[in-house]
Structures are given as structure tokens and as C-alpha cells.
Length: 282
Image (tube, one colour):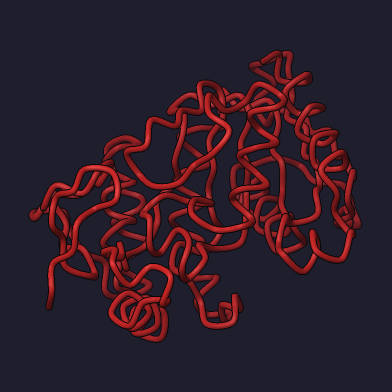
């Protein structure tokens, strides 16, 4: 394997990047336990001592053979435009504030986006749209998010993906989705105490978020609310310990298919994210 320079630090890395070798924002160490089955995902997710440890365990998961093969083959082969860069090639953990007021929930990392950069929604066209909009409404410190270690900060927001590995054709299987759900459930349990608003990108993110909220004891309306751009669901907290409930907002995913066709425009994206920021008091 040929080591290539990281675009931000110029340090050399092979692709995929081994944990604990100095990649910017790498949460894992050489000793981080690795899940190799759905049962181990459940055990390691439930046993994580805090968000940092959970992120570390997510970032080395190998529970889904098809996803492992795909993410690593993309990292080794590389897109021509990024042939001079190392690829992260591992699962992509949630990223942003550890006490977020806004939680953005998406589908999965992009094969040549987060799978390359090591940060969710970073390094592809969808991420360009999302971070620019978050910056315009005050949720992101910089307009762009190009690579881990680039100085981007989300002071009051966090981003997560329902599935943590880049899937072929952006379509994880039901088994892969369900295997990865334990990571999402554990992350929700850790961050929901401070979250005021969830922004769900696309129907997959919407369904995954509602499923995870139900798992945390939130009572969902029946029938379950359907996804739509601008959809809103107001939920009370299960223990009524907080006068502020949780608001769930739907937003079309900023995929190229949606943005190129005009299904999603910048004003439409800004409107949902601005609503989220306002409701969260950011």
C-alpha cells in the first residue's frame, strides 16, 4: 500500500487508514475494540463509556462484510479526482457538539465523501450544500467542510448517519440497517438530553430517527408521521423532566438528484435549518 499525504496535515497515510495512526479527528486507538457481528455491535454500543468511546468503537466496526468490502475497495481504488489523497475507508462516526441542541440525521457516508475524508457529510456536493446552509443560519462556523482537521466547528449541532459505512449505490440492506441501529440508539441515548430539534434528511433519516426516538421511550403518534419536506412532529419527553420537548423536522436530502432537478433549493434548505436553529434557541 502506498502512503499518501493528508490534504490538511501532509502526514502520510495508507488507505484505509489504520486506527491510532494520527489521522485528524480519529476517535479510535489501536486498542479500541472491534465489532465483527451484530451481537458485538449491540454489546459494544451498550457498553461504551461516553460519546468519545462510542465514536471510537463506531469508527472501527467490521460487522457487515458487504459494507466493509465496499468501503475498503473504494478507498483502495479511489476516484480519479482524489487519486493523490489517502482515503479514510472506515465507518464514519457522528460529528459535532457533544451536547447538541440540533441533531441532523442522514442516511450514510458517501463513498468518495465521508468515506474519503473521515467526517460525515464532508467532501461531496451534498455536504457542500448542507454546510453552506448551516453556516448561513448560524449552525456552522465555516461555509465549507472539506476534510477532517480543516477547522470546521458545529457549536450547537451534531450530525449522525443511520448507517455508518458507505453502502453500494447508497442502498444499505435491511440487515445492515438493523445491525447499525445499535450505534444510533446508543448515540441518541447520550445526546438527546440536550437536543431540542432533529432535522431528518430524506425518508431514510426520518424513519431511522423516529425508530430511535421510540426506542428511547418517546410516544409517537399513530399512525407514524410520514416524511415530507417541512414535515414537523412535536414530541414530549418520556419522563416529563424537561418542559421543552423535541421537535422533528423533515427535509429533502441535499443529494445531487434533488439539487440538480430543483426538488430542493437553497432557500428550501435554509428555511428548515433556520427553523431548527430558532426552535433550538441557537
